[in-house]
Length: 141
Image (cartoon, rainbow, N blue to C red; front, side):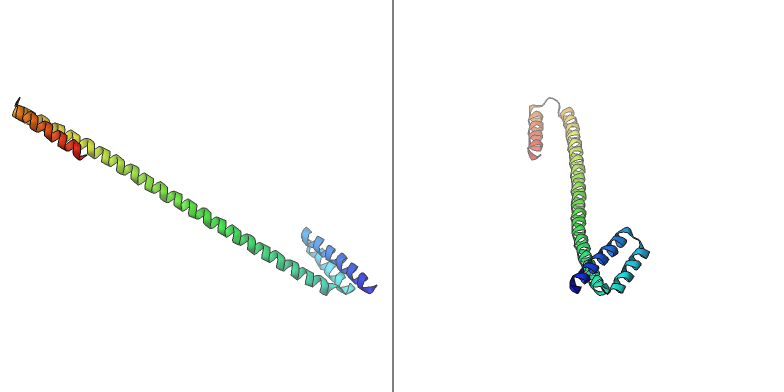
């Protein structure tokens, strides 16, 4: 009979302590603990409280570890995206520079053809030379 009474007191006191803790009412927590001590069940409540606190600490650690893993994965993805974007920008700029270089080469070639054409006049050999030179330069692109 006394075991059931102690168990009932322990459960009741634990409920009062828990309610006071959840409400954040420090004086009520202290009063509930003092009442549990007067009834002789404070040791049981403290053991339960330590056990419960250990569970909450373990849970918080697991949540923190999961959050840290997720944050690390997000940062890695962002860094990869930044690197990919930077590489794409460099590739785009390189393509633009190559296109401008090709345009300038073509413009210089045309200018040289005009000069040679004017120097050589209507010579068939000069025309053949120019045609072969143009074909050779186009084939090398």
